[in-house]
Image (tube, rainbow, N blue to C red; front, top):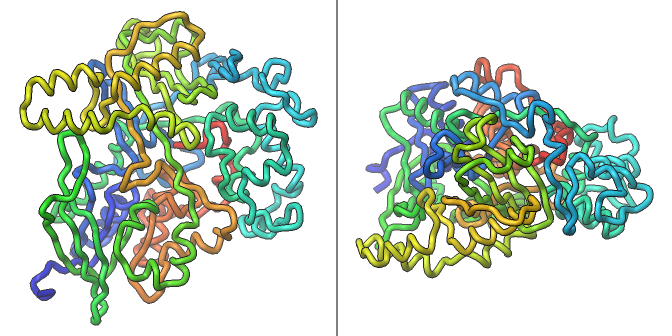
Length: 554
């Protein structure tokens, strides 16, 4: 039977930024190589997902990663330039207030400006005396200086030799460590004042302690004019120029089996993606089989766990370290308004933060100077602690029933659906119940008595399979400086490789996915570096530690 199957030299699994980059690079290196790219859904992009809300075609709603940092992230910056993708500035404020320091921080029912968070008289937290008049980044920097006074002199490996309170720093979860140093109110200020629960979560203390850094007010972010998922889409387009075979969409890798001759037999389940953008196995199931010499698993942790492969349990390294990263859930909610009402409050771009479940609000409009056009607000960017709040407002049962009736062309069901769910992109429709609650919190955050409700919305929950979460963080208790390079090729006797942001030193960013992909290609598969992209690139293990934590997630 195997003799009749298509035999690929390389099978790349996952059409996110890491997988599409690997497929493109392999084919570009040698057009004669038989390279296949497989994807679970019918969509290219992974956790880069751009959509648009009705009547605002020129403003991108980035439901996944939304930006990159040119002066810190060389791979994605060079790759975007080589592919000729148009970029624009991702504003965090106005020309006069570049970092949005005049935007709101609404905490414990009190209004202040983000730039006022280093004034202990104004913040609603009783911060410990030794951290008075410090903003969250400055507090975290002070903690680092107290615990690791020689931090500027350390290499990545040196960080794993640091001892704090009688044991190695890497054995601590960051939350556990902070509670040895901070009182509960100072910790709460650090958590809610940063905007992300992830920043003070119980990830590895070596990862999270140094990411505060000195407060940086002029971080320059960029984004893609056509949306961030234009990057993986362009990579697939270029990949297909080099091959007579398109990417295999709607193929879920179910099983990896190595034959006696060393060739891998791959078993895929055919899937279908519904009009509502849900991807499910076809029933009764349809299977696709092929052979390959090399497998690149360009996937997040949860997607890896869904594959049947003997090595997950038999190999000691994988058995102990596949779960060495935390899966960090996150959701985004976008609301479309008839006009950019926030410009009347002086907010042209950037974000406001709060301890309400919406946590962060980002402002977008078609033009920074026009407030009377329909405009977009990322009303909620929530992670970890806030997720159960929003999941409690999901109306999953009703939504499934109405979609089934609508697919059967039931007009009454369609009308009922439209009455329950606000207009928006298919697969990301949001119930009016959730919209009303989001809008109520937006009104409260901005100190308004009333505000015209949005006319459209979009919602994305990244905790669902096959992703499991929006990004990852190394767990406490794992010496990930040893794990990270080995995870690229976890079983030396197998031609199976792993890449993506999950097991990188740049978690939460497309740059981390590209870094691990490039290392798999050049270090493990011996593919030459790419001119104008990676020929002068070398891994910078301390780069992540220089990110300002207030803007830590992509």
